[in-house]
Structure formats: structure tokens, C-alpha cells
Amino acid sequence: MLTAEEEIERFIKTYVDRLYFGFSPRPDQPDRFDEQTSFIKSKHPGITLLLGGNGAGTTTCALMKSIRFMIAEQPAPRPGTPFWFISEGYPMVMSTCWAEKMCARGLLPGEMVQWDKISWYKPRQNWPFAVPLKPTDGSENYWTMHFMSYDQGRAKMQAQSIGGFCFVEQCPWELIEEVYRGCRDYDFVGNKIAEFTPIDPVLSAPLEEMLQEDRFPADWGIYRCNTTCAMEAGHVSKQWYNDFFGMISDDMREVRTTGAFASYEGLIYPRFQPKIHVLPDEEVQERIRGNLIHKRAIDWGSGPENAMVMIWAAKDAIGTWYVYDEYYSTDQGMTYTDHFNAMYDQHPWPDDTWYRQTYADPSDPGNLRQANNFLSNDGQHARTLRVTPALNSVLEGIEAVRNAMKTVHGEPRLFISKRCKNLIRQLQIYRWEKSGMTGMNPKDARPVPLKRDDHTCDSLRYLIFSDLVGARSGGISGSRIEPKNLPRYLRKKSTDS
Image (cartoon, rainbow, N blue to C red; front, side):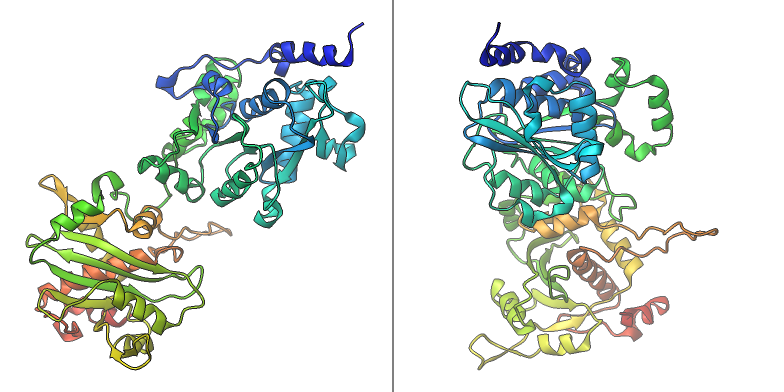
């Protein structure tokens, strides 16, 4: 007769073979972006990420890795140590993760559960809030699996000490950061797991930027999972595979099969590529040495979703722009005078022929007047940003920026310093409004940019287009571009708000 401890040890040694009715990870095919085995066996002190397509087996692998950690790799440090499973809503995390995969499909050995101590949300549906496991080291310490929802919000996940986590499906990156902080007391190897299909580029942008900028932490790991490999291995049916992917657009196929990062539908600047258009700050500073024309552009704003923005740029003799700095503030506590002082002080703006217009959003004459006559921080000395109303012809302005992004003789006519993080980020997500596609006769969307997280893009458009038309119409340093000097079709648009 085995003791309780011996019985648990037997399950620890054999559970991998009996999980998921004999499911085992597929052999790695890294050339096809399929790395289930490497993911399961990985040992990373930081976050272990698994990106994959729909039906690629990412959720199963993430749950397997989490259970393996609690049962076979790391005894709990205290009674009831929390391990969080987090998904978009309770139906997903409780029904899919617990009821379907852990219970019905045998992913978790039932003998490891303290069934009488489960905290239930909906017991008839087999939806628990918390499931305590049995101790694995002969002590009184044990893990408790908590099933959490994104809907609970960031506040519910702050300041709690946890022993590990497993994110299931894509979530706001700031939520991962908040939960990660909860592991500071128990910074175990292999206890921080996240899996998702990166369908929403807004949510995956921070991770993509880390990879692009070579900031991905050395102690993290990232793996991929391929739905096509899952179909070939018999983990999903060929019929389902053909039916599902027959509905998926070509643009999203790689995202839905291999977990490649999605791009935004309706991108306004699909030509923009950080590897081409973004340069290290030191290189930008070197390129703008000497006599280049310097200009600035402002987009008004105040508040968390309405940033106050200024960009600084220099143009060389052949018309190449170098955006070398940005001012970006969402501080609600700052007055416009505070913003203007900060902009004024960020870079000197000599009164000479090389430092010219500051193009500003023409929509608010009051802001234009304030920017041209505000008090310094001591409240005594009048200052000016010497602003001139920008041209706000949206479509023509976008076309001017697109032309600057084109490669001519091996280089574009627009480079951006790596320090301009908000401009780089927003250029990658700037997109057209989509049609609601509702009703019996849905209409096509108008060619209008989506007014969300776009203030640096507006500033860049003001700068490049206003300068372009000003040069064509004989605009001079410090002067406003008068409507009478514009092409006839632009005269009314120059004053549009």
C-alpha cells in the first residue's frame, strides 16, 4: 500500500505520458515556426512566450507547461501559493482552460486536486475561482490555481504576491507587466508563461518593438507554433483547417497559422519600415551637422488620449528630412503655457535663416495666438514659438509623407531618430477609418484617417506638406503661406480644420 506521498510521486513521474490522453508535443520544426517541444522543455527565468496560429496547440502547451511546473518542477513555497491563469473572460478561462482541457481531456491528473477545497463560481457548470492542488514535497505547502479574467482590470491584479502565471490569449501588455511584478517574491524559473495569436497589432506592439529594437530581455524566451503542422500531425482535422482558413484573408493567413505579428488593416503608411526609416540618434545628429534648414510642427492636445506634440526636423540640400526630436505629453496638469515653455526650452531656435517655420495645427486660432505670445516660466518675460498655421489638407498631406518615404537611389527622403518613439509607433498604426458594414446597404468607409493615437502623424503631415507647398509657392522663412499663393484646388482646404 503506497503512502500519500508515494502516490503523488508516482503521478509526478508518470503524468507527462498520460496528459491529454497521450498528447505529446510535436517534434520541433523551427524552419516552419513550430517549436512545441522546445517550449515545453524551456527553462527561462523571465517570461516564456508562445506565439501561434489558431488551432496550433498553444493553449494546450501553455497549460501543460504550467501544470508541469507546479507538479514536477517547483514545490509550493507556502500553503495555497497562487498560480494565476488569466484570459479575456471567465467563460474562456474557466470553461476552456479548466473544464475542457484540464478536466475533460485529462490535462491535469485528478488525483492531484483537493476537490473538497475548491472555491466555486458556478459549480453546476464546473467553473471554479480557485483549485488547490496537493502538496508535492511532503510538506504542508501547496499550489492553488486561480482563474482570472482581463475584465477584472489592472487594479484587481496589483500588489498581490503570486508564484506564477499563465496568460491565455492576447491581452493588454500593461496587464502582463502588472502581473509580472507580482512574481517578485517567487522569481522561479519557468513560472511566467504567455501564449497568444497576435491578431491585434495594438496589443502586440510593445513586444514587436522590443524584438525590432533588440531590447528583448536575455532571460526571456519566445517560441512559435504552426497550425499547418498541427493539421499534419492530426491535432486538428484537415476539414476544419480547410474550412477555417478558406475564410481568412491573405493578409491574416500568416498571423492565423504561425503567430506572425499582424499589421493593421487599412494602413496609411504601409511603406514605413523602422529598419529603413529609423536611424540611431548619433547618426541623425551627424547627418544634420552643418547648414540644414530646421523646422518644427505642433499638434494641439491635452489629456491621456489627446497628446500635445511638437516635432523638430532638418532638411538637407537634396530635400531629405531628418526628424531629430519630439515633444509628447499627455499630462493633464500642464497648462498650454507650461507646454510652450517646455517646447521652447527643449531645443534652442536661433533667429537666423536656417531655423524657419513652426507649422501648427490651424484648427484653433486661440492656440496660435498663445503660442506666439506666452510668458516664460518666471511669469515676466514674453516668449514666442513663431508659429504659422499649417496646411491641413489631409489627403494631399498624407501623399506628401508617402512620397518622402519612397526610396530614391537607395534611400528614402525621410529619416527619423530612434529617440522619437511615439512618432515611430504611431506611423506603424496610423490607419483609415473602416466602414461599419451594418444595415441592408452598408457604405464604404470614407478616406479619412482614424482619429486615434495619431498626433505625431498629424505633426509630420503639417511639416512635410506645408513645407512642400511653401517651397512651390515661394514661401519664405517665418512667413505664413497665403491662400492666394496656393494652387486653386487647395485654397479652401488650407483653412479647413
